[in-house]
Image (cartoon, rainbow, N blue to C red):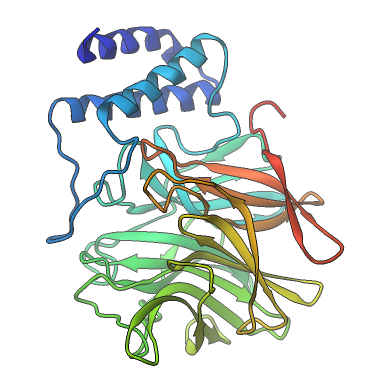
Length: 389
């Protein structure tokens, strides 16, 4: 059967599911549509590309028309058998959910996240808004209009915004995020809110860009992304981010940067460090303090979610290892469990991740996390099932 006939048959069989109102069906139908429509575009001759002049574009395995159509057919077959293949995975219907941040208010868990598109890389369809969803039980989710968007006339975020990190301070909510300009130079920015629903960008943006210890340049791709803010017991704020640095011999290597503040507006460099076993930048940093130890979680590209421990928030990190990983990636180091966040909710601890899948699918998944008596961490193998729990 030729491709167009398969496409038409898929759409016909999908029709009866379009009138159903439950979220799992709506989410799965939207994923099928997105994959099949993107496959149709590619089959008709659409050539994937990017917005950055002179930068080559790589399409990893699983992003071809046939692969996406097979995935759509697989999801449809599951639906026709009364199965929900995306149970346990949350995203807005038809969308992807990437870097994210949790915050609790009045017994409700809120999550803010990068909004992407199934079937498209961020270089083709920009991540230009943050989504906002919330739950009271980790099973049923509601979501609203996007919480924040790019501002086209701001040179430091005219292209995209990435990686929200939300915290509360003195009765106000702060959202730190990465501003990305049209050549992918990245900077630290922030917005504030009184209620988590209405946000205003601070006048001081961008709050920070790296100094001469880093090859940062507003006129070219420069790494200063994936901000995470941690407040220590003495009230000091530390912001961790993914960047590059010069070595003693003048070479450039990936690193994690740390800056410090007492008021969330004025920031000073503290230092940089690199995880020895992380071949690329340690992306999506997340820091938590427990039992007088600092835990640094990060995405090790090509490997998965890893963590390190120290007795202070700045240095002395000891790599412990992988807690969620993969043995093999399909020639794309980003296709690993990534973007981890740790939180306690209703007396249990959880760790989140977003696993990029062939077809540019990416969803939020939650796993129960166990703190062992020796300070190590164990992750329960089965994710929280948003539908069947």
